[in-house]
Structures are given as structure tokens and as C-alpha cells.
Length: 275
Image (cartoon, rainbow, N blue to C red):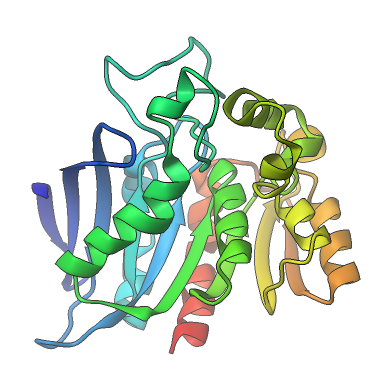
């Protein structure tokens, strides 16, 4: 693992790191904020998955999480959203391919060679972070924004024994029912069962359970009606008995101005459940 940069912030250290990923076959970059802590002490960790067009840098630069993470003593990890590089298949569009890995392991050519973001964020990166940083892997939470909210919900619902807390900002809750979900068709082909495993609403309908979820959604989000559809998640959670706190935030859009406004709330919410 290569250290790209480190800087002191709120008494802790904000770092950016790079490593060669076996899952994606590329170099991958991620950021980690470690609050001030005693020697030998291990802290809970909050994983943050970013959205379409983003890298690790968007939330690292604009997420405004460090003060809250320092206060609540939570490590914050932000991976990239897709493999990158000259040899990685790509398309000239913003909502598919590089910057839009959708947190799945692609099975269709040419994407299957590199687009293995599910394995990366659920297996490879956690193992690396656990070996290099003072994390208590028994106390993990996960959150994310937009496509990353989709990732946080599906990862959390698939691994409820691993993640004590799951939240999201403006998530894509049902990709198989919205236009952005056509990416799953490209990555996963005709495998309906595989696509349902990467759809939070479908996962809940098929029996996946967590105790509770926190979701913030801006009412002025221009993707709300066509792509995000939080009402589908609300209905699925109500039918399944999952305690969903869906906060519709008046006047807020889809940007990091929205995410950063409510980031401290999410960090505190996770910290209360991570102990």
C-alpha cells in the first residue's frame, strides 16, 4: 500500500492511499480518516460509498465528516467507485463504466475482467484496511450517496451480521425499476436473480432484513421522481417490518451541499449504534 498524502485534521489524520487490487486488476485509490486515539486502541469504522461520476475525493474534499468523526471517534473510509486506467473498458457517458461501477461483480464481457467492485468493497478493501489501520471490525457501519447509497443498502442488507448500522443519502433504492438500473443489464446480463441481489427493494422483498435504516432525501432533487423513488423503499420496509427513518429534506438537491448538511447526523447515528 502506497501513501499518496496525509494531513492533520481535527486532531486526527486524513490520508489517501493507493494499492494494486487483485479484485479489479488495477490500482485503486481510497481515503481514510483516523481520529486521534490512544496507542493500541481500535475504533469503529464507517464505510462510505460514493455516487456516479465520483471518486474517493468528492466526499473527502466536500463531505464535511471529519469534525463529527473526531467527536464520535469513528474511522471513515471512502473507496473509489470503479476501476480506472487505460486498459479498463469504458464508454463516453457519465452514468456507466468508469466512475459508475454500481458495486457489482460484472459477469458480462468486457466488464467482467475489471468491474468487480462488490468483491473489492466487501472483501479486499476491508481486509487491507483491517491490516493497516486501528479499526475494530466488530463495529462496522456503512453509508453512501446515490449510486453509493444503492451500494450501502445492498451491502448492508446482504451482510447484516457484519454491519451494525446502515444509512444512505438519496439512494437508488430499486435499480431494476429505474433507468439508471440499465447498468445492471450491461454488467450482469439476463441473470434476473443476480440483479435482484443488487436491488435493495428486491432484497427486502426476497427476505433480507436489517433492524433499521436511516435515509435522507432532498425534496428538490432532480433525480427524485425518475431514478431514486424512495417511496418504493418505504413500502418494502413497511411490509417487512424494518424501521425506516426516511427524512425528506425540503429544498435540498442531489449535490454534496445536501450530503454535507446531514453528514454529521449520519455519523452520530452510526456512532450511537457502533458503541
